[in-house]
Length: 320
Image (cartoon, rainbow, N blue to C red; front, side, top):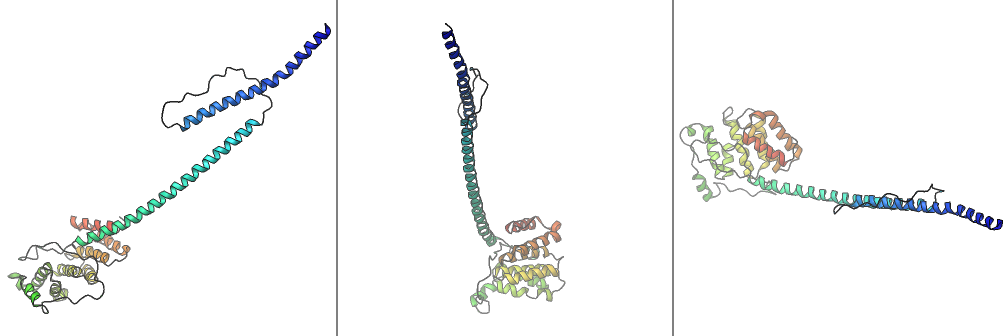
């Protein structure tokens, strides 16, 4: 009987020793399982973009948790593996982000180049149809035809220009020039008025050399006359249409600098910017002319002059 009792007690003691170790393993497994479920739920919620809500796998823990024992190495190894995976995903995402940013920079550069080329082409088209300001003068041309649209040259003639035909060298041209009506009445008595009006009519008929001859030296011959500012501005416009932008720029500048209060001084300054544009001068020089125009005549400019100046500033990307 004692022998049997001793055997039973020893067996019970052995079970008591083995039970905590087994319970401890089950406790670690249960904790890891709960962590797995929680991580899965978080990953699904973060990555979900549409669709029905995902029911979480986290539920009440029905199993009793036994006091943890010595931590095993398996959970630490698993956490290291997951951390490595997260770092790898982050590195891949960063690489894709840098690639996309580089592509975006290339697209922006290509678009900027395309915009510059398009702006240049549009500007060339606009210059072909732009009329120099201040040339039409119905008040001065008392009995001539109504002013028509003015053609503007877009670039100076390349190479040596051919000798222009004149009335003296071309009989047919002489007849055409003679058909242009000359000023009569009081305009014929006033020599300055006669020269200005006749040059204006010749210019409208596109007889540029003959028109230039009427106005050359006008400022010296008729110094102090009210038409000097108008005549000089018209002479510059005739030079522009005759593919002589260098001479036009010189005439425009002299008319503004010598007669800043003249009737066409502001127009000459505005036309000077256009002549410099045709000559492909630096944008800084052209913008400086527009700045001078605004500083000197800002409040005196007409609506048409302001619109023309704003258009020129925009075409040359001048600062406001």
